[in-house]
Amino acid sequence: MKKNVYNVPENTKMTFPFSHAVETDGTIYLSGQPSMNLSTGEFVDGNFEAQFEQCFKNLEAVLEATGLNNSNVIKCTVFLIDMRDFVVMNELYKKKFEGPYPARSCFSVAGLPMGAKVEVEMIAKR
Image (tube, rainbow, N blue to C red; front, side, top):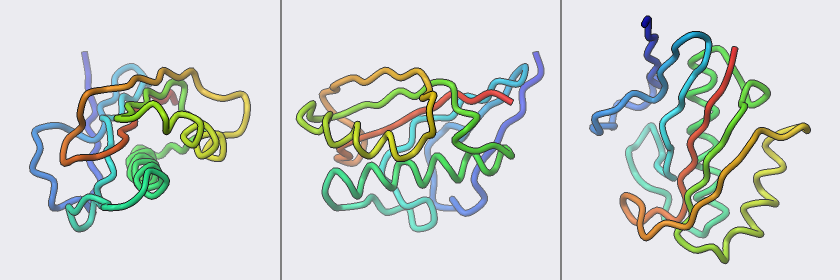
């Protein structure tokens, strides 16, 4: 199986052992992105909305590195620390895509790295 690996060049601060995205057979699997500024390595210390926006900024940078954009996304998985953010997440999420929306799962989790409130991962297709 042939794999192409993609990393965002601006992220020189990342020291975690994973690739931003891996492609095989035209399907691109994007690693979960927390609310970390990829250029500085600092986490967004803000409200849920600011953290969610940073997650998508990161994911969109990874999609761009693969030559794709949000219209190529077929599946998202959203991890929330607090399910009370679900309604706000839905409002922000629907601004990121034009219908029909990608398939999506959303889970409440006990914790995320660096105290993040949200993390999002994607699957995209050429």
